Length: 248
Ligand code: PGA
Image (cartoon, rainbow, N blue to C red):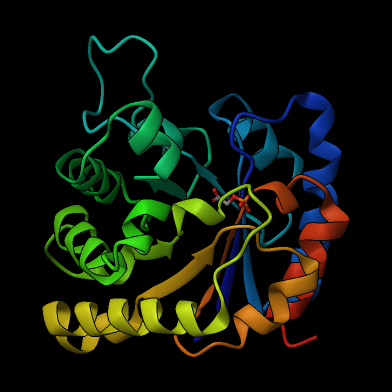
Protein backbone atom coordinates (compact mmCIF):
# COMPACT_ATOMS: atom_id res chain seq x y z
CA UNK A 1 0.00 0.00 0.00
CA UNK A 2 1.36 3.44 -0.94
CA UNK A 3 2.28 5.60 2.04
CA UNK A 4 0.33 8.78 2.81
CA UNK A 5 2.28 11.59 4.44
CA UNK A 6 -0.15 14.16 5.84
CA UNK A 7 0.99 17.42 7.40
CA UNK A 8 -1.12 18.84 10.22
CA UNK A 9 -0.32 22.53 10.45
CA UNK A 10 -2.57 22.95 13.53
CA UNK A 11 -3.13 26.64 14.37
CA UNK A 12 -0.15 27.77 12.30
CA UNK A 13 0.00 29.45 8.92
CA UNK A 14 -0.64 32.82 7.31
CA UNK A 15 -0.56 33.86 3.65
CA UNK A 16 3.24 34.04 3.96
CA UNK A 17 3.30 30.28 4.63
CA UNK A 18 1.92 29.41 1.20
CA UNK A 19 5.43 29.37 -0.27
CA UNK A 20 6.20 26.38 1.97
CA UNK A 21 3.13 24.61 0.58
CA UNK A 22 4.25 25.41 -2.97
CA UNK A 23 7.64 23.85 -2.26
CA UNK A 24 5.88 20.77 -0.85
CA UNK A 25 3.70 20.63 -3.97
CA UNK A 26 6.83 20.47 -6.13
CA UNK A 27 8.10 17.60 -3.98
CA UNK A 28 4.74 15.88 -4.27
CA UNK A 29 5.22 15.83 -8.04
CA UNK A 30 8.52 14.00 -7.61
CA UNK A 31 6.84 11.53 -5.24
CA UNK A 32 3.82 10.95 -7.47
CA UNK A 33 2.95 7.28 -7.75
CA UNK A 34 5.31 6.44 -4.85
CA UNK A 35 3.71 8.34 -1.94
CA UNK A 36 0.64 10.52 -1.48
CA UNK A 37 1.21 13.92 0.11
CA UNK A 38 -1.31 16.07 1.97
CA UNK A 39 -1.30 19.29 4.00
CA UNK A 40 -4.12 20.14 6.40
CA UNK A 41 -3.75 23.89 7.00
CA UNK A 42 -6.08 26.02 9.13
CA UNK A 43 -9.49 26.44 7.46
CA UNK A 44 -8.61 30.02 6.50
CA UNK A 45 -5.89 28.74 4.15
CA UNK A 46 -7.58 25.76 2.49
CA UNK A 47 -8.81 27.60 -0.56
CA UNK A 48 -5.68 29.69 -1.03
CA UNK A 49 -3.46 26.62 -0.63
CA UNK A 50 -5.53 24.72 -3.19
CA UNK A 51 -5.20 27.61 -5.65
CA UNK A 52 -1.48 28.08 -4.99
CA UNK A 53 -0.75 24.40 -5.66
CA UNK A 54 -3.41 23.55 -8.22
CA UNK A 55 -1.24 21.89 -10.84
CA UNK A 56 0.25 19.43 -8.40
CA UNK A 57 -0.82 16.17 -6.77
CA UNK A 58 -0.68 17.79 -3.30
CA UNK A 59 -3.87 16.98 -1.39
CA UNK A 60 -5.34 19.67 0.87
CA UNK A 61 -7.53 18.90 3.88
CA UNK A 62 -9.20 20.41 6.92
CA UNK A 63 -8.36 19.76 10.58
CA UNK A 64 -11.88 19.32 11.96
CA UNK A 65 -15.50 19.61 10.88
CA UNK A 66 -18.97 19.95 12.36
CA UNK A 67 -21.38 17.03 11.84
CA UNK A 68 -24.02 19.28 10.25
CA UNK A 69 -23.83 20.65 6.70
CA UNK A 70 -24.92 24.17 7.77
CA UNK A 71 -26.81 25.97 10.50
CA UNK A 72 -26.55 28.03 13.67
CA UNK A 73 -23.14 26.84 14.90
CA UNK A 74 -20.98 29.93 15.33
CA UNK A 75 -17.35 29.35 14.56
CA UNK A 76 -17.75 25.86 13.15
CA UNK A 77 -16.92 24.66 9.64
CA UNK A 78 -18.84 21.89 7.88
CA UNK A 79 -17.32 19.19 5.69
CA UNK A 80 -19.32 20.59 2.78
CA UNK A 81 -17.53 23.93 3.30
CA UNK A 82 -14.13 22.20 3.31
CA UNK A 83 -15.06 20.46 0.07
CA UNK A 84 -16.32 23.74 -1.40
CA UNK A 85 -13.00 25.40 -0.55
CA UNK A 86 -11.14 22.71 -2.52
CA UNK A 87 -10.31 20.30 0.30
CA UNK A 88 -10.52 16.56 -0.28
CA UNK A 89 -9.98 15.33 3.28
CA UNK A 90 -10.45 16.20 6.93
CA UNK A 91 -8.85 15.14 10.21
CA UNK A 92 -11.32 14.26 12.99
CA UNK A 93 -10.79 13.23 16.59
CA UNK A 94 -7.32 14.68 16.99
CA UNK A 95 -6.26 14.41 20.62
CA UNK A 96 -6.03 18.21 20.82
CA UNK A 97 -9.73 18.36 19.89
CA UNK A 98 -10.55 15.55 22.30
CA UNK A 99 -8.69 17.38 25.10
CA UNK A 100 -9.29 21.07 24.34
CA UNK A 101 -12.92 20.67 23.29
CA UNK A 102 -13.97 17.55 25.18
CA UNK A 103 -14.75 15.61 22.01
CA UNK A 104 -15.71 12.00 22.69
CA UNK A 105 -15.92 9.02 20.37
CA UNK A 106 -19.59 9.44 19.47
CA UNK A 107 -19.01 13.01 18.27
CA UNK A 108 -15.90 11.98 16.36
CA UNK A 109 -17.92 9.26 14.66
CA UNK A 110 -20.67 11.75 13.73
CA UNK A 111 -18.01 14.01 12.21
CA UNK A 112 -16.57 11.10 10.24
CA UNK A 113 -20.06 10.24 8.96
CA UNK A 114 -20.54 13.88 7.95
CA UNK A 115 -17.22 13.91 6.11
CA UNK A 116 -18.34 10.81 4.20
CA UNK A 117 -21.61 12.55 3.32
CA UNK A 118 -19.59 15.42 1.84
CA UNK A 119 -17.30 13.08 -0.09
CA UNK A 120 -14.15 13.75 1.92
CA UNK A 121 -11.47 11.28 2.98
CA UNK A 122 -11.45 11.18 6.78
CA UNK A 123 -8.36 10.79 8.94
CA UNK A 124 -9.62 9.51 12.30
CA UNK A 125 -7.14 9.94 15.16
CA UNK A 126 -6.86 7.56 18.08
CA UNK A 127 -4.18 6.99 20.72
CA UNK A 128 -3.54 6.54 24.41
CA UNK A 129 -2.38 9.06 27.00
CA UNK A 130 0.77 8.49 28.99
CA UNK A 131 -1.25 7.49 32.08
CA UNK A 132 -3.17 4.94 30.02
CA UNK A 133 0.06 3.49 28.64
CA UNK A 134 1.58 3.31 32.13
CA UNK A 135 -1.54 1.48 33.32
CA UNK A 136 -1.10 -1.10 30.54
CA UNK A 137 -4.31 0.10 28.89
CA UNK A 138 -2.94 1.08 25.48
CA UNK A 139 -4.54 -1.65 23.38
CA UNK A 140 -7.86 -1.42 25.23
CA UNK A 141 -8.01 2.34 24.67
CA UNK A 142 -7.15 1.96 21.00
CA UNK A 143 -9.84 -0.73 20.57
CA UNK A 144 -12.45 1.40 22.33
CA UNK A 145 -11.65 4.49 20.27
CA UNK A 146 -11.61 2.49 17.05
CA UNK A 147 -14.99 0.91 17.80
CA UNK A 148 -16.52 4.22 18.90
CA UNK A 149 -15.05 6.66 16.38
CA UNK A 150 -15.12 4.76 13.11
CA UNK A 151 -18.46 4.69 11.26
CA UNK A 152 -20.04 1.53 9.89
CA UNK A 153 -20.08 0.99 6.14
CA UNK A 154 -17.44 0.76 3.44
CA UNK A 155 -14.21 2.06 5.04
CA UNK A 156 -12.46 2.87 1.76
CA UNK A 157 -12.69 6.63 2.50
CA UNK A 158 -11.17 6.25 5.97
CA UNK A 159 -7.60 6.57 7.21
CA UNK A 160 -6.69 5.81 10.83
CA UNK A 161 -3.95 7.80 12.56
CA UNK A 162 -2.43 6.14 15.62
CA UNK A 163 -1.07 9.00 17.70
CA UNK A 164 0.12 8.22 21.21
CA UNK A 165 -0.84 11.46 22.99
CA UNK A 166 2.42 11.58 24.97
CA UNK A 167 4.43 11.55 21.73
CA UNK A 168 2.66 14.54 20.13
CA UNK A 169 4.80 17.65 20.03
CA UNK A 170 7.10 16.31 22.73
CA UNK A 171 10.02 15.06 20.64
CA UNK A 172 9.39 11.60 22.10
CA UNK A 173 8.34 8.83 19.74
CA UNK A 174 6.96 5.40 20.52
CA UNK A 175 9.48 2.61 20.01
CA UNK A 176 9.26 0.66 16.78
CA UNK A 177 8.08 -2.34 18.80
CA UNK A 178 5.30 -0.33 20.44
CA UNK A 179 4.25 1.11 17.09
CA UNK A 180 4.20 -2.33 15.52
CA UNK A 181 2.11 -3.72 18.38
CA UNK A 182 -0.45 -0.92 18.19
CA UNK A 183 -0.68 -0.96 14.40
CA UNK A 184 -1.07 -4.75 14.27
CA UNK A 185 -3.82 -4.45 16.86
CA UNK A 186 -5.58 -1.74 14.85
CA UNK A 187 -5.25 -3.79 11.66
CA UNK A 188 -6.76 -6.82 13.40
CA UNK A 189 -9.64 -4.68 14.66
CA UNK A 190 -10.28 -3.30 11.18
CA UNK A 191 -10.28 -6.71 9.48
CA UNK A 192 -12.49 -8.20 12.20
CA UNK A 193 -15.02 -5.45 11.61
CA UNK A 194 -14.73 -4.81 7.87
CA UNK A 195 -13.34 -8.14 6.56
CA UNK A 196 -11.15 -7.74 3.47
CA UNK A 197 -11.90 -4.01 3.17
CA UNK A 198 -10.25 -3.53 6.57
CA UNK A 199 -6.91 -4.62 5.17
CA UNK A 200 -7.00 -1.71 2.68
CA UNK A 201 -7.40 1.02 5.31
CA UNK A 202 -4.24 3.03 5.79
CA UNK A 203 -2.92 3.31 9.34
CA UNK A 204 -0.68 6.35 9.85
CA UNK A 205 1.66 6.88 12.79
CA UNK A 206 1.74 10.33 14.35
CA UNK A 207 3.78 11.79 17.19
CA UNK A 208 7.09 13.59 16.68
CA UNK A 209 7.75 12.07 13.28
CA UNK A 210 10.72 13.87 11.74
CA UNK A 211 13.37 13.36 9.05
CA UNK A 212 15.66 11.51 11.49
CA UNK A 213 13.15 8.83 12.47
CA UNK A 214 10.77 8.67 9.50
CA UNK A 215 12.46 5.92 7.49
CA UNK A 216 12.61 3.54 10.46
CA UNK A 217 9.00 4.20 11.52
CA UNK A 218 7.66 3.95 7.96
CA UNK A 219 9.36 0.57 7.57
CA UNK A 220 7.38 -0.93 10.46
CA UNK A 221 4.74 -3.44 9.35
CA UNK A 222 1.25 -1.97 9.05
CA UNK A 223 2.55 1.61 9.12
CA UNK A 224 1.09 3.11 5.95
CA UNK A 225 2.28 6.67 6.38
CA UNK A 226 2.53 9.49 8.88
CA UNK A 227 0.54 12.36 10.35
CA UNK A 228 3.15 15.02 10.89
CA UNK A 229 2.73 18.14 13.02
CA UNK A 230 5.81 20.23 13.84
CA UNK A 231 7.97 18.80 11.06
CA UNK A 232 5.34 19.64 8.43
CA UNK A 233 5.75 23.40 8.85
CA UNK A 234 9.08 23.58 7.01
CA UNK A 235 9.02 22.22 3.46
CA UNK A 236 12.57 20.88 3.70
CA UNK A 237 11.79 18.74 6.77
CA UNK A 238 8.44 17.59 5.43
CA UNK A 239 9.91 16.68 2.05
CA UNK A 240 12.62 14.62 3.72
CA UNK A 241 9.83 12.57 5.29
CA UNK A 242 8.04 12.33 1.95
CA UNK A 243 11.26 11.07 0.40
CA UNK A 244 11.63 8.43 3.12
CA UNK A 245 8.05 7.36 2.34
CA UNK A 246 8.80 7.16 -1.37
CA UNK A 247 11.56 4.66 -0.78
CA UNK A 248 14.10 7.39 -1.59
P1 PGA B 1 3.83 16.34 16.07
O1 PGA B 1 2.23 16.34 15.91
O2 PGA B 1 4.39 15.73 14.80
O3 PGA B 1 4.19 17.77 16.24
O4 PGA B 1 4.14 15.50 17.27
C1 PGA B 1 1.57 15.26 15.30
C2 PGA B 1 0.08 15.48 15.35
O5 PGA B 1 -0.42 16.00 16.37
O6 PGA B 1 -0.64 15.14 14.39
